[in-house]
Amino acid sequence: GAPFPGGTVTFNVVGTPGTNPAKIYRGSLRANPLSTQYGLLYIKKPFPHVFDLGTVPASGIAITTKTIPGSVSPGAEFYFQALHGPKGVSGSRLTNLLEMIIE
Image 1 (cartoon, rainbow, N blue to C red):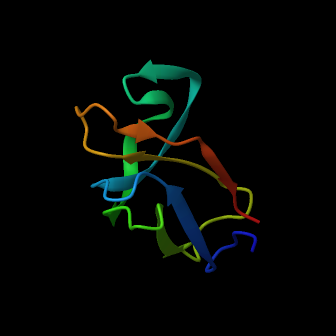
Image 2: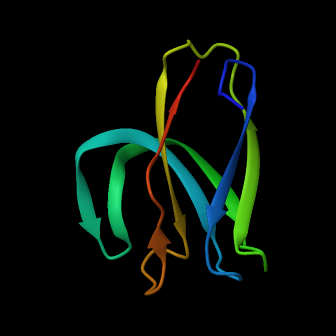
């Protein structure tokens, strides 16, 4: 469904089964993506919200559901990107950018 104040949203992160940790970061959108050892980073610090997904299950899809605070204004924009695998470890990867606009 559409994201709205007080509603819930579900994040699905596709990763290699058994990868730990898997985390979703919320940050500001960069003017230009930053090339990193994990892939392109589209958001920048500070990361006011980090959602820990734990270990990517055998299905290869880590899932979490979050509630959007009722105080969030319609039209607000949020940017998310996930990293599956530990920082500093070869094979850890960034996901694509997710832009969420509150209705």
